[in-house]
Length: 347
Ligand SMILES: *Cc1c(COP(=O)(O)O)cnc(C)c1O
Image (tube, rainbow, N blue to C red; front, side, top):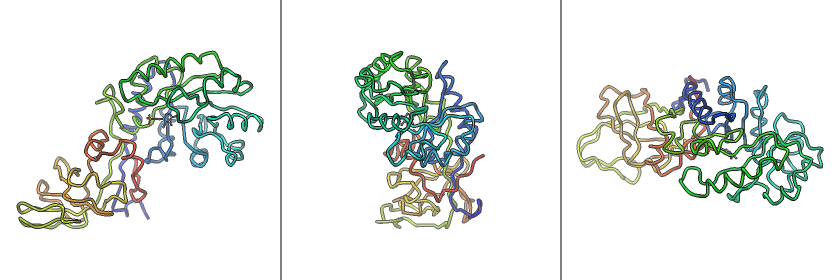
């Protein structure tokens, strides 16, 4: 499929991505600012994101698995790549051979890494989220002795909320300063960066905010939309008062209306939560979604755009905070759910 053949595109804005990283980097103060590019760069394309952010000065990248590390390793010259899920027994060959470091999460992973001869690694410590990470008590008992630790990290459970757990995790993490041989410490994700300088330590790890997600009010108006789906019109049609539209006849026209049928649906990640609530744009004209989102198709009202016709393109309303509100999906789901039929096009 050539780049112009697809009836469905994802427009990706390099300058918005870089501006977002630069804002997060500035908010990180003296700490370095990395980038989480797991889940294929939150659906945008990990290698493409990595290339753009490393050109902007980003030096620390995070993926979830060794398969994700391998997919970008050839581009990972002059940058550090960390694998957040660490090393299972099945990962050891890739981990020993590769250019990436494991983030060791369990005593078993620590033992496995030491037995294989060690080498540079990162370590995740659990400070209350009870997801991944070794216990501070195990660190005190000497679990990490002898490891070559580049970054000691922990992860905030509620950084997008104003709750006392944030400060509690920050204090517990800060208490580990000097207790390991780690060269750097890292706590903050996107929302954590907004919590202030105490949370930045030596390295921050934003993900969603790089891609235009707004994790907290402090970031509202500061981050630019990076990803915008665009769909081509397959058919334009007129309906009259009383006509029904789409699956389950969920929309009934109360007057004469003009519709456009678009090449996008829930199989592309444009989920049913947008039914009757989402919108597309044609220039300045707003085109409301009518009725149910279908698997591969979407129906919008084009009364506001009399000149639009078959073959024309419209953009889908996908500013993440608003789209999350409208659809009931999280900003993370909105990006990582975008399907492979959307041709990724960077400008
Ligand atoms: C995904 C992830 C991040 C990035 O989180 P955002 O909320 O997307 O900024 C940072 N650190 C770890 C350990 C992660 O798993």
